[in-house]
Every structure is written in C-alpha cells, then in structure tokens.
Length: 320
Image 1 (cartoon, rainbow, N blue to C red):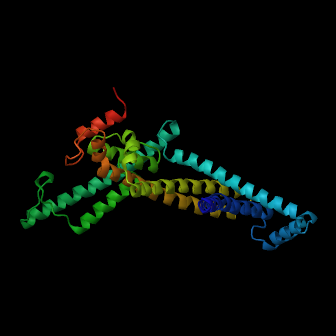
Image 2: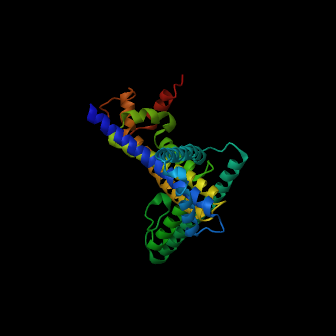
Image 3: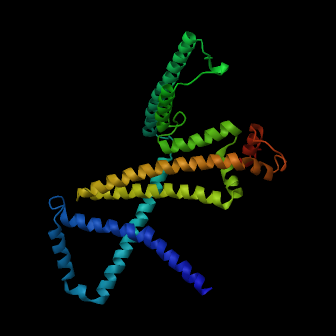
C-alpha cells in the first residue's frame, strides 16, 4: 500500500505544482516586475537588478527562518492567485454559455441575428445564382438541369466553392439562427436542436443517463473536450489579471492580449469538439439507452425514431 500512496502523493503534488503554483508564480513575478519598473522604466533591467540586490542585501534575508517564510508566503500567494483565476474562469464559463436574460444580452442576440441573416442571405443568393446559371447552361446546351425536386443539378466547381465559402461564413456566426448572446452558447444550443430534430430527444434530459452507458474511451474524449474548455476560461481569467496589471506596467497588456486570443481560439475548438462528441454519443448510443430502459426490444434493429425519442424525453423529465 505504501508505494501506491507514494505514487498518488507525487501525482497530486505534480498536479498542484502545474495547475496552481506555476501560473500563480509567473503572475506574481510579473506583478513584482511591473510595480518595480512602472511605465517610465518598463525595460530597465538595471533598475530591476538593483531592486533585487537591495532585497537580498537586507540582514533578515540571511536568516534561514526568514527565507523559509518568504518561500512559504510566495507559494501561498501563487496558489491564492491561481485559485482566484479558477474562480474567475468558472464565472467566465457561465458567462460564455449564458442565455439572454438581460437587455445587454438581448442586444447581443439581435446583433448576432442580423449578422447571421446577412450571411444566410448571401449564401442563398449564391445558391440561386448557381441554379440560374445551371438552368441557363442546360437550355443552351441541351443538358439536364432540373429543379430541386428533380435531382440532376450539376454543380460547377467555381459555384460550389462560393457556396461553401458563404456557408462557412454563416456558420462562423452560428450553425443555426442565434438565440444566445455568444457563439459558445449557440454552438451547444445547435447540438441540442439538431439532436431534437433528428430523434425528438431532449438532450438536457437525456445526457446524464446517456453518460452512464458510455464506454470509458468515449467518456474520456468528452471529458477532455470539457476540461479544455475550462482551461480556456481560466486562460481568459489570466488575461483579465494581466490586463489589470497593465495599468502599472504596459507590457503586461501584450501578455493579456496573447492570453485572450489563445483562450478564444481554444474555447471555440473545445466547444465545437464537445458539441460534436455529444451529438455523436446520441447517434451511436441513443438506441442502446432506449433498450436499457425498456422502451424498445434489445434485439431490435434500426435507428432511434422520433416516437421513441419523445418517449425517452418524457420518461427522463419525469413527466406524469
């Protein structure tokens, strides 16, 4: 049992060091540097070296007890700074995924709706122009080009590239018409809407039960995407901290911008991956869950139909 406890303790210590101490110590170092140099001497390394020499030259610095107290205080402050960043990161997560409940959020939703509508109009306009060009070509050359229900509409490479570009521009705003103030919230909302449209399932009610039947590799992938989103939110919290430090030392603003850009990129990738994995879990294991709760026979085949999905949602909502 002793080797197990030793291994567990070393892993916990490593996790504590990587997640709490190092980011906090880096921030404390930036705070000490920024407050020492200020805006006027932002790059004066001699000034910083002199300040460090003055601190090291004090009589109390030679005492082992004082040095131990300073190290302990530095570790505690670094841990406190990281815990504050984690708390702020959790707040940022909720802010990113929030629903529209206040005038400012409703304004953001309306602004995103206008952008999405404009992109969708551009996409539909590209589709219409392609259809008109294909129809004209068929009339002139005697080829086949039928309307939507008649199949045979040959897509020219140039038109296809334009349609794809317009669709991608629209999807960068949201996959479906926006209903939340942020892209992150809309991406998760789109996953729920797409699952409901396909299977009649309420993803919010289904997900806790579906999680219990997923295999460990699937759970690990989903948890990794979820953790990556949390890490991105904490990075955004550090961006706030370095942004505040920029009031005293302007180079800190560069670090804040770098953290913010990286956090945004990683958060978008994480949410997109998480939403795709949640949809995939319903696609692959939704019917298995319906069989486990007795709504369909275990040996039946086929896809999860909307009627079964509605019954699953009703069952898991505990509706009477």
